[in-house]
Image (cartoon, rainbow, N blue to C red; front, side):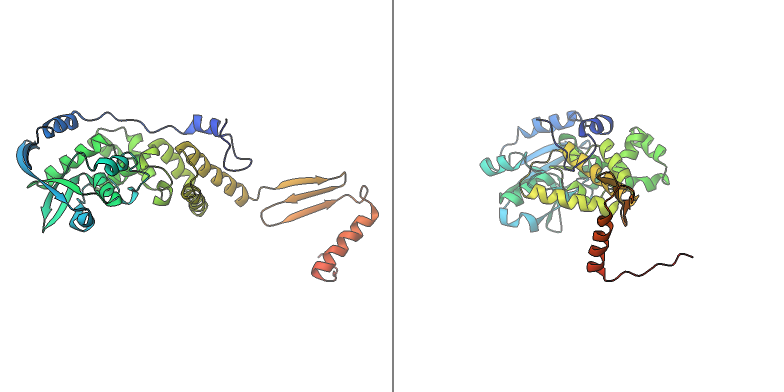
Length: 329
């Protein structure tokens, strides 16, 4: 069955999606992820030595009790994954296995002032909190460079979204005096992709929260939404609130439907703000024009019954009191 648009008289979803929106692109998993997983398979007991940034690090496996995970651990501030966007929906790939057999692969972290600081494993940490499971962590003596490397390993395995990449590009942009071209060269990424990610990062989190996970919003679609969002912030936030209520009520909303609905809301709002008029014709001699602030009723005295005007005037006088003549200057 063809998907019906969420709004009446909305533009055709298939046409717009084919022109403007694309599904998120899947990125290949880094070979480093495979190497690390193979080395972890040799873990026996509670310790293992692994090379990190060319230096061997001795890791000790610790298990954080379920009721202490949230307070005893934190995510390293250099981790690019937005923790506010981790929830049951975005962690749907992890939660079932946590509920049936617990955490399968340990996280990587260091200890700072007694707090476990997680480099790789923030999604598993949140899944443990949601499901009430113990949290298994390999803890080693790591510097910031090694923490960054391990964090990147995790992001290669489960790529961060265009929104999260855009946040990182924004933070780095000041290093290049706001020059996107220079940043693109340093990152080895096309400048258009950089710009799209930065624009996507300019969207409020209320919009990202509608998606099952932030990766559903590609840089191209996010860029288009950001441009539509400009000058229509209230309308899009209102649309996001309505869609979020629909999602919480159990309605299934795929990424394309969400993107289309947001654009539809903006189109309707723009038409209203521009005072676009709708017309209705009643019989042969009456036309009503409906605008944003005014409605005009045009009566052709040559074609309407003589008693109709008297009836209309009676209705107006009953509602607003006796009429008075208006002097034209």
